[in-house]
Length: 353
Image 1 (cartoon, rainbow, N blue to C red):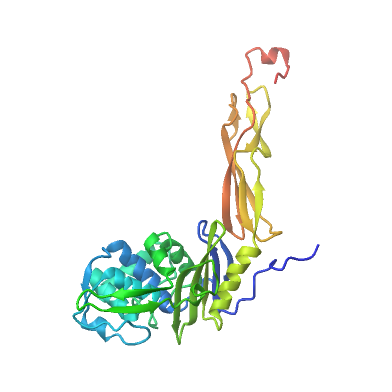
Image 2 (cartoon, rainbow, N blue to C red):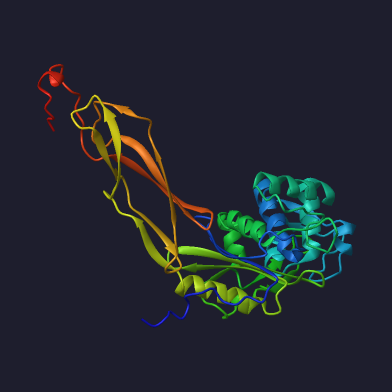
């Protein structure tokens, strides 16, 4: 049989990368996934999801002189004293990666930039992002500002559960509007994969600084599943991300790990008409895996039993492990009834089933 074209993951040039299935959080590819690295504007995923959770997007914010003074990188030319809705600032930060917008977001939501940054770090801890620390809201290089490919994948998985966030990061182009004085600015999404590079792509964020290099978080709906690819410091970030997503689409297959009613083992029963009871799987388990992968199975059984035992009684479970990650658990139940021995059982020494 000829080998499959996508039997192995692609060669990724990024210095760190992760491919994750969003619903399960299962990681299919990891390269230096836990290595601390500057995240550049990928930082804005946290900035914006936190602001969306903590404030009203219709709130009108007055631009401060600090926000207006931001001129490095992408900006929307905020001017001190202007009034603009929080939702418009978030739109600018996520779609066109506006650095001045993140300072205005922080000041509008928390009162000042540094307080909001502390809230970002608190949120990271709540989400279990143990290798992430923020020193600012936009990703400017700073010795105290870092994350990892794995943490950024988990952060993106969390953020994409918010429908408004997911809608914004999939937007190709839109217009930012100010309240006072009224003006408009057309903006385009910095993620080239949204502009015809990969039709299934739904986001999420680009990031570039000299220290971080070219970074990208890309998400795509592949069938009924959503995948998230993170590439950090890549010479070809769009190719790396699209190759990982293409491998997810063509190189992973449904594998039936357990069938409904499948026999697993027998559990001893004392005082019963049977000496043990057969255990069967109470449900089916199917996982998406590369072909030919080994899956470990850990069986946990109930303590020794005494009759009677009713059919269908939960008596254990099987945990399926792949590359140190839990694929799922299947309950094991009694497949038949075990009746208690009658008082005269020992007198006749017979075994009734």
